[in-house]
Image 1 (tube, protein in one colour):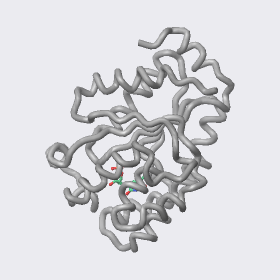
Image 2 (cartoon, helix red, strand yellow):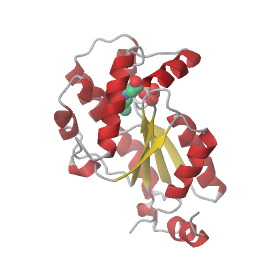
Image 3 (cartoon, rainbow, N blue to C red):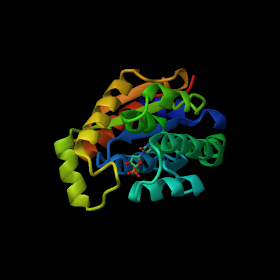
Image 4 (cartoon, rainbow, N blue to C red):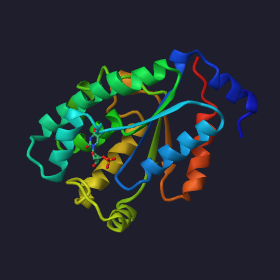
Length: 219
Ligand code: TMP
């Protein structure tokens, strides 16, 4: 367990140095749940938190969501739209929150673009069009195999165009595993990675995330 002093150091850093944390994983891996649990834990020790997500709720995110329901875009156009939505996400949500001293927890980021769009478009090009995105301080990847994904998506009942194709999701999963080892990443997306088994008990996953988050300190 981290020493209490490390919480103190972490939470009293200058405002602009609050950490930017990203949670990634295939659909149904429990990202949203873990983002919320982490946010609540941080708030319970007096830390201000901003929870964000991609695709965003802004105008470009809306085009993307419309496409996901009933695809009409070329895969390269979609990759560019995700990169563009990300620029707006950073400008309108992430950067302002960090400069107010809030810890930002984003449900998905550029790693999703490399993992998903990289299935049908050159992942090196997808990395390149995201090569000036803000570097996160920590990326948590929730890993899960496609048979468990199938079950969870079925239980949840909703699907987008990617969730329907299990072999595609298996490819995405493998890409996330490669990304956690630093493959396909432009320099700005190289950071600390925490790869976790998403089939573990959610409270146990939350504890493992907390152990790492409470021990990272900005330089
Ligand atoms: P969500 O289910 O987490 O809301 O994400 C919506 C879908 O968008 C999901 O199928 C993954 C996909 N996606 C990409 O393909 N590329 C990206 O860059 C992002 C952020 C999401």
